[in-house]
Amino acid sequence: MNAPAPDHRCEGPGPDRRSFLRALGVIGAGLALSPQALAQAEAEGDPYGVLVDTTLCVGCRTCTRVCAEGHGLPVPPDQCRETTSPTQLTVVDGRQLDDPKVELGVVFVKRQCLHCLQPACASACLTRAMHKTESGPVTWDKGKCMGCRYCMVCCPFDVPKFEYDSPTPQIRKCDLCVDRLQRGEPPRCVANCEAGALTFGRRSELLREAHKRLATNPDGYHQHIFGEHEAGGTSWLYLAAVPFDRLGFPKDLEQQSYPSLTKEFLYGVPVVLTLVPPLLLGISKAVHHNQANGGDHVGH
Image 1 (tube, rainbow, N blue to C red):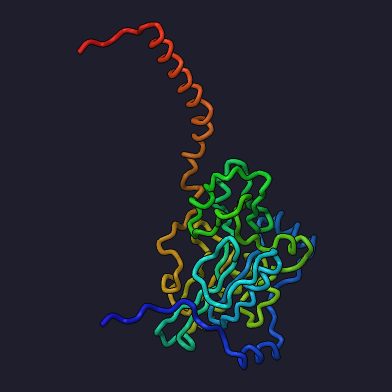
Image 2 (tube, helix red, strand yellow; image 1 turned 90 degrees about the vertical axis):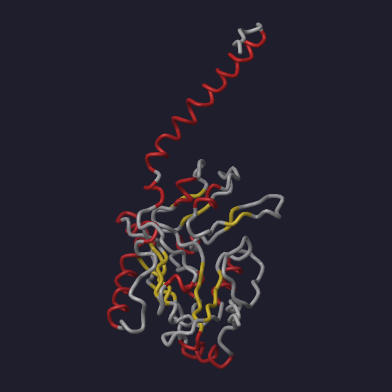
């Protein structure tokens, strides 16, 4: 008999555990952000990001609710989801695993845009509607978007979502609460994480912290930081007790950024877009002119 399929709509912590966390007053760890610090991060090319420690996440899904409230979206259902949607920019996925390293047999994984260092979505955007800011967030400008949806096709993490049911559709995804960063505040999800599973800061500092946790607790973590090198590196970094493919992360991702893999091709795109259309137009006119004048026929 086949084993039943894992139920990904896992329940979060019960009221007692949630109340215990509130009593502790454990709010998302992070660094104070000032305009000077933001400018310095941009100048040094060290973007801001978030470290997600899945061994600390309890599945309360507070992050999904505050994200929805902050972006004017409907309050999401209180259940786990595997992927984001146009109305839910971050989700918490629950993975039931039979592994001695997994407390209570379930791992909760927060998912959202990973804000790649060299995002394929931004490189594919012909109008620069999708844009990587120097401070870290990958943002989308509806005033520049022409609706081609190349960003959706190119994203190795399947993040950008299109509002197919809207008369004025947009591309929706996590923007790392860029409005809050500009005010010197951390992202909403980090500021409201009661379990301390989310840490905000510069990417270099987050990597140092992640490597420190791996070194001090080698038995408690799978010895890998997801996002350190995947797709050329991301601003969101992950730690876990088990290999990441068991948590639904994509396997065999390139270590190089995806834009760098297509650099030679992309250099040729402007030439193609500039020369090929006039060439085809000229051929078309020549053919029509030839037909209009009873052009020569090749014998069989």
